[in-house]
Every structure is written in structure tokens, then in C-alpha cells.
Length: 136
Image (tube, rainbow, N blue to C red):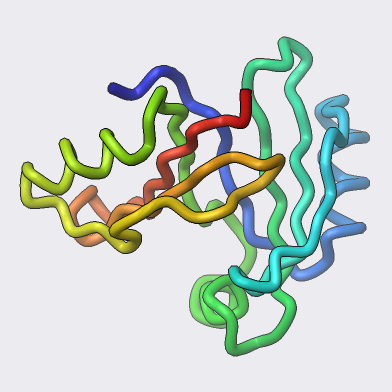
């Protein structure tokens, strides 16, 4: 079901500073920047040199957003892991049938036009997990 690690989401206080750091240290390439008001973040997707996976940098739009609260509790750092799937709706049904709690019962808009859904970290060793069906 999981095809590959699509991206790792990193919560940061300043998107611009984080972009500068990841580009200068790792040579990543910024391929997308957008504001996702529904999720309360400004975000950037930075591609690895192979182009097959990304680092997603997330700056909260306000302190009371999910990422804002995360940074307040834990500081900057890894927020979630995103896995590519062929069909996010089918993956949700299959995973939900195992008893893992679904944060999203149906897909929603994600970065770069992807369909996404989140799984509850309490059922996955404390890791917030995102399913990503990339736009093809």
C-alpha cells in the first residue's frame, strides 16, 4: 500500500529562514510554496536531488493552529511523515479497517495538488502519518 516516503514535514518558526538553511546545507531545490489556510500554514516543498522525495517546511499562520501549537509544545522539528499511496481513499478504507484512527475520513487538498489524509499518531508509535496521493 505504501509506495515510498513522499516527504518529511518539518515545523519551523520562519519559513524563509528554514528554506535558506535547507537549501544551503543540503542543496535542496524549492519546487513549491503556498499558503494553506485550511491547515493554517505557509509551506514549501523542497526536492531531494533525486526528485523522488521532499522536505516539507511548515510555518504556522497563527499560534492557535495545529503547527503553531506543535511548536509551542515541542519546538521546531519533525512534525509528520508522508507516504505516497496510489489511492488515498482506498488506503483510508484499508487502514481504517485495521482499527487505526483516521484524522481524516476522506481526502483533502494537500501540497502541489495532492490528495491527502492524516492518521492518528496515538495508533502509530506517536508519529503523525500522512497519506499522499500525488497529482499525476
